[in-house]
Image: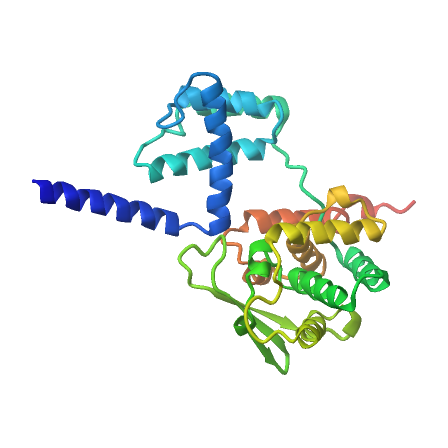
Length: 305
């Protein structure tokens, strides 16, 4: 009997380990931060956070709705559900008290996300020119130009960008192939390869600038950009400000959304955009395409005044 109990305990620990390994490191960090906020709310109000119940979650969502976007509420529900699964508990997140509460919040607040602005081609040129005009070291200039141009041209997530290793690169006649070992939508770790071609204009060419950075820094192993994913956002905000743009409107995701929006504006097909960004569903990509076409397909273009 004791051996059976020991075996079950061992299996439980191994299962918990597998559940954790199924998520990317950044995702787990986000889960911990979200659940910490929920736990603090429960502790303050004398409620159980683990295991919790639908009524308590509904109360938390109402509390959160005063200061948070609707998308944040949905993410917190997903987080709390996953943490419960990891701990071996079931939480009915589709319970009427949760769903009807969400519906009421949505009707009052709306669900539109005021997302950070994408960095479009015109913005990208301003930023690259601004980097060249700063009085910082040539090393930092080379790194930041390569970081921003590669991040934009590959439609990279911040976490993917800072995880690129020297051994992940393969320079070919047409450009560079970059192997992504694991990403947010590739939890099984199958990996994917992104191909970035040479641009005619060397000043804005991601491949040329990546080569310049590698040659200047003499990197031959390890991380290409030895910075944190949070640093990517800070770098973008810094150069957005120097370019005369409103830095508060941009974030680390602005490179990725900028790629999707810019390629959609240029007429790239949905499947080709998804092949580069790694999106598994069309929902977000179609949002970028819709944004890109707001003026392009505007009915007012037919009016002649």
